[in-house]
Length: 270
Ligand SMILES: [Zn+2]
Image 1 (cartoon, helix red, strand yellow):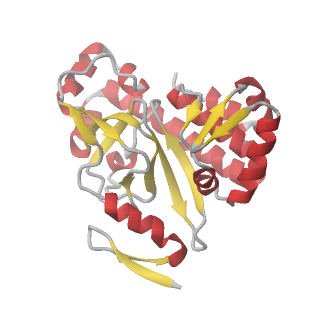
Image 2 (image 1 turned 30 degrees about the vertical axis):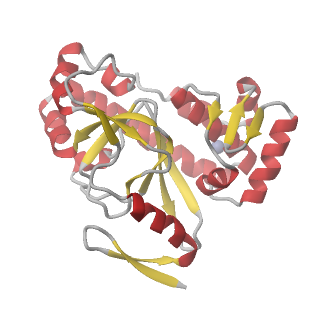
Image 3 (image 1 turned 180 degrees about the vertical axis):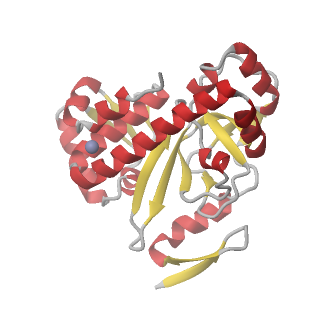
């Protein structure tokens, strides 16, 4: 059975009831400003975001007054489909997942963006409304910038434009590879890849993820994830405590992963 939900921009969307719980949760958290501001602009130390960090000092200094450091909470929705993209985010320690929800309620993750990138990049190309769900996968910090201000900087500064376009190439590569991965590789391979991708973006072996979340983001069912995580535990590759996955043996996790790991990793920003 379908229900109709009204978005803040006035659009309506008919969705299957199986995902209504997630949507209601999303609306509870929906606010015009995503992320809790805890540092005013102009006082940034060396940023941990790789895009910002790759800018020459003078260009970074120009951006500084436009940036605000915010905290992105676990499971917070940054954008929902049809949301106007007010702000873009340069994650430092946070990781944001972009995904779609299918008619049957299953989710398919399209990309994850951490400190290597920027969330909301499509707005620079006159695509002002979000196409996908963007949700905080791993809580942490990010620098927030007004989307119009960033568009102006990108159009007027060749260095920023180049860095930004490099990321867009990386982003498209990731989505392309994930499409191949979702269609051709086993859930076990995809889980290993996914854990490695998260670990790489937050440098943390202890990941706050439940089996249900993992199943949702990989577009599969929890029992499959339970079986696979048990196998990986028995092999000493990971451990799982309540609401956490702990990576114990990254090298063997890479061996268990599909080739997509090296394909995505080798296309890092030059
Ligand atoms: Zn793969």
